[in-house]
Every structure is written in C-alpha cells, then in structure tokens.
Amino acid sequence: MSGGALLYPAAGTGLLALVLYDVFTTILHHWGGAGPLSGRLAFRVWQGAVALTRGIGPERRRRILGRVGPLLIPLTVTLWAGMVIVGFALLYFPWAPGAFHTGRGVPALRTFADAVYYSGVTFFTVGFGDVVPVTPGLRLMAMVEGGSGFALVTLVVGYFTSVYGVYSQQKVAAASLYYQAGSSPDAARVIRSYLHAGSAEGLAAEVGRLRDGLAAIRSGYASYPILHYFASSRPEQSLVRLLFVVQDLGTLLDTAVDERGCPVAAGLGSRSGMRAAAAAVQDGVAGILLRGGTGDARGRGPLPESGEAWARRFERARAELRGAGVPVREGGEALDEYRRRRGEWEPGLRAAAHALGEDWEEVAGGF
Image 1 (cartoon, rainbow, N blue to C red):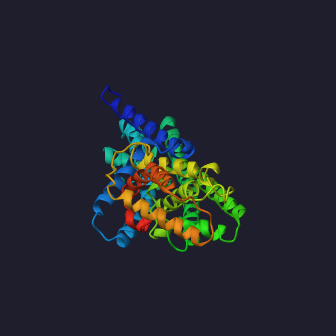
Image 2 (image 1 turned 30 degrees about the horizontal axis):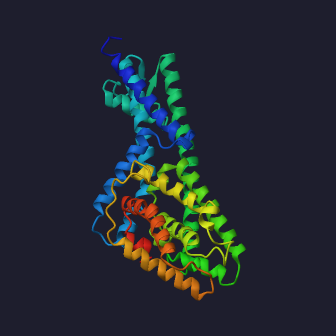
C-alpha cells in the first residue's frame, strides 16, 4: 500500500472514531448531553425552522415546529449511518480490487463509489454476496461493520423510546396544571382552588407534586437534549407555558399570601423547592437553546411594558384570592417584591419562548 493510499484508512479510522464518540455521548453516556455532531445538527435544523416560520400565525407555526423534533430522529440516524458507511468504505478502498471477489457479471470493485456500495450493503446486512472480501482481515472488518449496523439500530430504538416517554410526561404535567388553573395560565386560580376550602395541606401536597414533576423533567431533558426541540402543537402542553404558570404560582405564594393569616401556604414557592426546580428546568432550556444560562441576557429584548403589566397582574391576583377568603399581604411592599421576583425569571423565560418559536402573549395569556 502506497503512502498516499494510507490516507484513506487514516481518514476512515478518524471518521469512525468521531461517530463512535457521538453515539456514545448521546446514547450510552446520555446524561452527559448530546454528542458534538448530533447536538449541532439538531440546533442548526431548529434554528432554521424557527427562522423560516417567523411571521406565520401561531397555530400554523406550532404545527410546523411540532414536526421538527420527530424529524430530527431519522436525520440523526441517517447522519450516523452515513458516517459509518463512508468510514468503512475508506478502509476498504485501498484494497480494491485485488482483495475482493466479485460474482459473474458483476464489475470489479474499483471506484470509491463501489466501496461505498459494498460498505452500505454490509452495514445494513443485506447480504447480496455479489462482492466478497477474500482476506481474513477484510472479512473480520466486514463482520465488525455488520455488527455495528445491528447495534446502532438497537441502541437508537431504545433511546428514542425513552425520549418519547419523557416527552409524554412533560405534556401531561403541563396540561394538568393548565386545567387546574381553569384552562388558563392564571396561577392564582390554583391557589384559590385549594385555600378557598381551607385546604392548605392540599396546596402543599400539590406544590410538592409539581416540584417532583419538574425535577423529573429536568433530569429527562438533561439526559435527552433532543427533547428541547419537541414542540407541542397544543399551547396547554407547552414546556414554556408550564414553567410560566409554576414560576408565577411560586412567586404569588411568596409575595401575595399573608404569612400571619395562612402560614402553611405563605412562602411555599421557595420553601418547597418548587421555584428552584422551575429555575433549574429554565436554565437547562437556556443552556441548549440560547447557548448560555438564564443569567445570560443574549437574545432578550427590553421589557418596557412589564412594570405596569406586572402590577396589574398582582392586583388582579390579590383581588381573586381576597374574594375567595384567602388572607393576602396588602400595601406596596408586597407589590415591589412581586415585581422584583418576577423580573428575575420572566426575561429569561421570554428568551426561551422566542428560541422555541412560541408567542409570548399566547404563553402568558395576559397574566
């Protein structure tokens, strides 16, 4: 084999090592995040889809973006399979045609395209038998490639089954909270529904359930980063909508409910860890979609209207709770605290909604 011919196996080995690392990082070591290849592919495809759908109506846009996540699955598999096939073709090609026997009427394996054909047939274990390696080393190589094709398909099926399981869990959690809030993003209704009947313990249990659900979602999204590109076609199943209601729920519990009149519920958002769990999910979304944490202001626009809007929201929530007999904190100090806390999480959530192609007004619904 000449010195120039050595470049082919070197390139093939490097390509196979790269795809092996990507598959290992994404599937076998999935808690470490997406691989460098599959992660970039998903991010770029999503960015393109969001850019192309700007200006389209929210409902139609949701339907289009909702297909991107599932589409990334065959795209990722195609990327991996193509790299493996080309990588092994680079290993086979320097030995052609002398080390391969071809059947009667079959052209000799001479070009790189012929090597890719043989590699593809071997990878998918088609077994035509029209091209057969004659040396022990190449036969062993063909066995390894056939086994790698079978292993890759098996790993991918198991991985994406888990992905859909976590995604279903997130949709159920979001829809459940949406219906608890009276088919709206109004977190005050969740508080009222429990405290109106004097069931502070029930509210504490519900907040704990939300915290545990968010912790499970955070773990799932960290393990399967491709989930960040699964957009629901129904607003009530949106991850951003879920985070908005939970964050507002925790903020209202910490600022609107009077500690003297209802000590069990007051401050429950922070005491229960629910707000911390929501912040962890939000930061994970920002880390993937915005390439930074929620403390990173990139992509965020100013919120000139938020001060008055947040004040109206808080007064509306206090009136609703007061009408249900829930003791609330009066005065401007509570409003100032609500504004401050909401200012900590809403800008980052708006940026995440923008990156996900969601309309903020549809997410927040005026709340």
